[in-house]
Image (cartoon, rainbow, N blue to C red; front, side, top):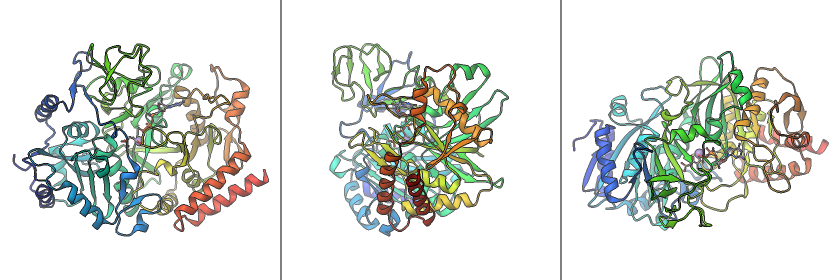
Length: 591
Ligand code: GTP
Ligand code: SPV
Ligand code: MN
């Protein structure tokens, strides 16, 4: 097949990869439905994907990855900067020489007898000033089809790129899927990503975490913008005004759910609405108006399937009803549909579980879907997709929200005193680990700005970049912290969450407009209980007290954890944040 570009930078790079991987065929992905359909058919014929019931799920497919390849693997993920200090203490590091040479050995001849696909893609609307271009070379049709959902691909991207050398060079090969040779190497200084021996989304859809966060965070540091692990949503009031907020929660801590939230009935009746701009990643730039503007660089959602249902997240569920791909969920052999835990009360009796074993949902005690099973769905399917989703300009942010899973320490919501204190709050974000990455679940770990696994450079430099961005804004977003996951002594969540989180968003916007006061506390500004609308909720006064309570002893514990974490990051932690930490300690000891 002929080349789709005459860009010599691209062609020379591709040439090197072809020599290394030695594919029998090379196919340029032009983004046309004709070509994609040929690939869908081929992947169905080899069993790489299965076509679902086309009446119930038009254009939808099913995929399974290997048992040991179902989540991001942080211990296999490396930042390969020339200087180890630029990766910092929170990243795994290998020298570029070593990583390239390990990669070359693994990739050598790995595509012999098979086809190599070249996917040109744009992160962000094609041609927007915010957007960036990447290529993913892969030997997986699943990756091609997923990238077609998650990003904007094809000829139009090449047309915008022209002869430019400004693109990210991504290489993915399944190789033998050997876990011992699985690596996700990032070379921020070379705009290059090498991923091998995996077929799981977060490791192989290179536009997402690899480019749009790890490489892009580094680019943003160098170029004066930010790439963040944040959802973006618009809140429309009854007058039709829309305010935008972005929120950073660690993996599997509720970004997709908050991004698509349906307000409680009393708000819907008044005319409040929520519009989704993005559910996982935000690219942020300061504009001439002194505000921070956000785009969602992605075109689809790679969402956690279990727990998603008509009640918990109607909009996400609707997004999956056509042209979606389901990975590691239950396959219903009776009607070629999919199922996962909490999908409904009626699990298939004649199904296949996430490992492909026969599974009877009425009898089996084992889970049918993997806890990190996912759907890949086009954003434009989403019933509440924002009219600004395709806007090349992005949306202006009124607030930034940090949040994690904290059984005890963090209250339902509090506000930082100012930008610097807000950066401190973000830098101390902590959460109990989830199934989104391999490893133990439920252990508290510090996850600054929800970027611990995604920051492509030194965490202390990253904090300094946040502080600097604040200094450049005359009208910066206000910074908040939320916790939907407080529990009682029985380990049950005391806040219903989901749609009711709208009540907290309302308080946040009121604070942005200076409409309500707040209680000054050692950790920041907390709501007066009467300023949050608990109307038509089944919630006791005692629970409200518990939601807004600060337990000084557990905060003193937490403060120690922060101190240790800062010490681990080392001397790049900015002085301003160390002062904020001292303030916190002083405030807690005085209270
Ligand atoms: P990534 O895609 O991994 O970045 O995850 P995410 O941050 O988008 O998380 P998601 O919205 O998919 O939610 C993950 C899990 O948290 C699901 O099991 C949800 O049901 C649960 N969850 C989301 N919001 C809430 C909430 O407000 N309260 C409670 N208790 N659980 C929630
Ligand atoms: C996350 O883990 O934060 C995800 C899924 O959004 S993955 O693409 O695997 O990173
Ligand atoms: Mn995520």
